[in-house]
Amino acid sequence: MSKTVLIAGASRGIGLEFAVQYAAEGWRVIACCRSPEQARGWLPADVDVQALDVTDPESVAALGWHLDDEPLDLLICNAGVFGPDTGSFAAPGDAAFDEVMHTNVLGPMRLIQVLAPSVAQAKGVIAVLSSKMGSIYETSGADALAYRCSKAASNMVVKAAANEYGPQGATVIALHPGWVRTEMGGPNALVGVSESVEGLRQVIADAGVDDNGCFLDYTGRNLSW
Ligand code: NDP
Image (cartoon, rainbow, N blue to C red; front, side, top):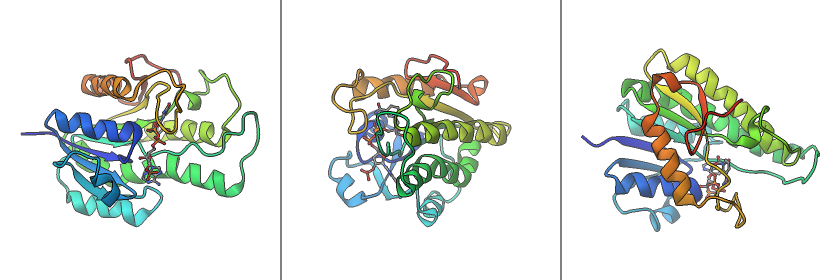
């Protein structure tokens, strides 16, 4: 029987590439996007495209009803925004801060709360797209403060979810995709989107119970929080 993956934020970039690669491998793919009609145009025809805005609790709850307690082998919390690129240490405005935190922190919190029981049922994996920019140990810059803080906070979401849902059978991991050539990463980024997603898929395939609550990059390297 084919496996099922649900990708939050699959309209472009890394999320779209996940949908394309898993569909090519024969998985049932539920690709969730803010503008599903538009995304249907470039997603493979056999992909199930659903509406989702991770900042909207009703939209996240509707996904739970769509899944209707079916086992879910893989949940990828990919939707993310970068927010203001301040260039140096500078507090963002309230609205920008709220958007970044709602999307990058509250988004995965809500998705995991609603969908983790389905993942636990399948003994599956919950993967949250984090970033080295959110690692307190690894970070060397002070720019994009809202983004950095949001990814540090989403790492805590991963740890807490690992504590809660690991004993129920799910493996919860944070992933750094590399610096990837997408709209967010920009044209000078070092890693192509297909290379990044191939690596991330391998890391997810290799993830076992011992990896619950870990922070890994697309090559499988363990990162420090
Ligand atoms: P992109 O900006 O290219 O794509 C972001 C995706 O998130 C789009 O599909 C976008 O949808 C979706 N999204 C944004 N807000 C919402 C929302 N409220 N609800 C649903 N979907 C939403 O980013 P990348 O593909 O580069 O990044 C994917 C993830 O990887 C992000 O979490 C990012 O932080 C992380 N990451 C990326 C790095 C990089 O170098 N690219 C490095 C480290 C981490 P829409 O089309 O509707 O805007």
